[in-house]
Amino acid sequence: MLKLNDLKSPKGAYKKKKILGRGSGSGKGKTASRGHNGQLSRTGKGKRPGFEGGQIALIRRLPKRGFTSKFKKQYQIVNIQDLENRCVDKQMISAEELISLGLIRKLNIPVKVLGYGKLTKSLTVKASKFSKKAISAIEQSGGKVEVVNAQNS
Image (cartoon, rainbow, N blue to C red; front, side):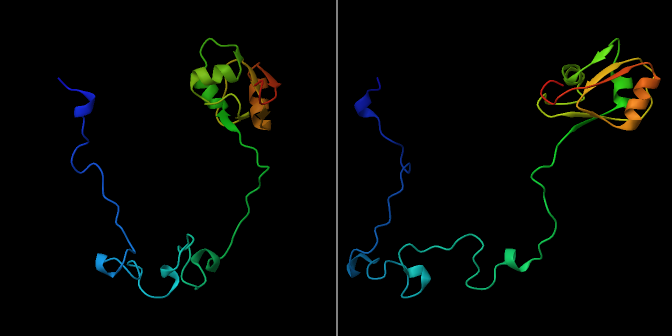
């Protein structure tokens, strides 16, 4: 029967720490395997990521291009062609319906409806934004367009 006092860790489970700087007889004394002088022999050594030994780092040598706006709005895109193909026996299309149809993934990201394709069904579509072509296509097919906030869409 196995007892707590009989438990042992398997052989090789723990690696013995290398002991440095304990006199010349230890084989790892004096400079403690760090060499003589220079940056790497000092305590607190180490170079930051991207450091190239004093040479101008690559990230600083490359040209900087472009700009990323922190105010950019992300939209989930739905085309009216997708509504035509996926919406069967539905009159009201909201964000919850679009998720169940697999056209969008999240409720908290606003939805924009674009006018690619043809729409023959009469639908009431609720979304955060619509293109002019999408509005005209939905209204021509006898449907309605409702603009809602991103959280409520």
